[in-house]
Every structure is written in C-alpha cells, then in structure tokens.
Image (cartoon, rainbow, N blue to C red; front, side, top):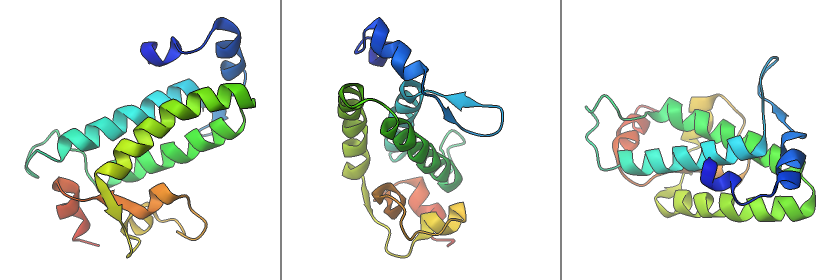
Length: 143
C-alpha cells in the first residue's frame, strides 16, 4: 500500500480519500486501499497455485469470489475519481488485472457466479475467469 500511495501527491491522495466506496452499512474504503487489496489477492492466488490442495494456507473458491466482489468495488471507486487520478491509478490496477488474466482462463460454465450467487449477465470480465491450475481448480470441480 505504501508503494502505491507514493504514486500520488498529497492533493491527489486527499481527492481519493474524499471519494470512498461503501462496502456495507458501516464500512467505507478508498480506491487506494481497494487497489492494494486487489493486487495483494491476485498475488496470493497466483502463489497458491503451486501449493497442494491440502495446504491449510491455500485460499479457496469462496476467497476468490470475495476477491471478485472487491474488484467490483474497486471499479466503482475508479469510476468515481477525476480523470487524471483515475488514469494514474488504473495503470496500477491494469498491472494486477493483467497478472490475473495471465493465470486464469474463461469460466464458460459460470462457476464463480454460482459460488458467489450472482447473475453473471452484465458482470465485468473478471467474473468470467478462473485459475488454470492449482487448488481452486479442484474446488471448482464441485460446481
């Protein structure tokens, strides 16, 4: 998060902090926190792909669904930012998105939408991606 925050001057950071997104009735989060959270989750899922399904530190399909919801909130936060700031933060987000796309494949059966209990129609691209390998793939065979 600290490295991401260094990309913005004090005025830009204040602008971002002034436009938080509601993540529940009593919780708001700004775009910097959401972007750092998405990037961290993308990295964790990528690292987990090399671990066995039995490893108790491995995140599962429900963790992935939570990350996809977080990505939705991040998009909402990005959309609410003024263009110059949005563009700067979007470059960071695109790097995480690219990493995510790099180790995922199309989810034609909509398994992630089933897990998250959401309608996949009209959902952004990240809702139609699942890891190509790793423990989550085993979890997805149950759907």
